[in-house]
Length: 328
Ligand code: PBG
Ligand code: ZN
Image (cartoon, rainbow, N blue to C red):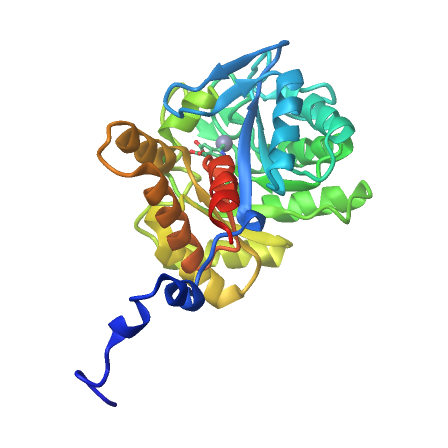
């Protein structure tokens, strides 16, 4: 192996055109999924304080937003609902006239070229803010799984293109797959939140989705941030149960997990750059402490380099515009 001074890495770094030619990882619009929050009412577009540039929107405003998203070339959204009424068992999650179901129908009717992925969980819909039904303070696994399967079917019946269960109950992927197939939705893919960690980075999201648990936390179902091998086993089991795509969440602080999952299974792999990751970059940018655009792109390139095929990110519109601006 030749060494310095004959070997010079910098030779390929002087000319920007050469740098462009040898770049290993590039962002593309096809990588992007934008999360959106739908609320009851009309003409509502309320900015989420801790997530500048992101809004809670009523169905009418959401449809207009989706038209813009599609025209920017972003292929997919991830839909979250904040219901009119919450109750112990999260009834609105699986009601045919629930807020997400209304939103799906309206988007499908009015917007072409946009994939609607729905988040399937109960925490936005339960009065206690937990991801399942309770017995005392315990989240019941199997009872919750049946309700999640009903929620998934109800999203599919409304016209969802893809289902993304985020609850982390055991056995939910198998149950949801079986229910969807039984109802004739065998063509609807499941993107499983397969390795989802109990994370402080979800803080701003819980304001956006009004889903902070009334007591306790999510550590009895979401993963311990210390566990990498267990994450690989979680993903393996979701694949066995029928997941078509798998997700690692959060993204930036869990790049090692992302890398291992992509290397080991090679499935289409998504990463969720969550609300806290977004908020930190935004806040530092707004303070002038970092260059927001540069760190946005760097954070997303890193996620892609680690193995993500798709990134769920609150920056999706900014990235699409950046790609329009910079692409030669
Ligand atoms: C619901 C859900 C959460 C997120 C996605 N789906 C919150 C949670 O588990 O508390 C977090 C997304 C984000 O922080 O951007 N289960
Ligand atoms: Zn949940």
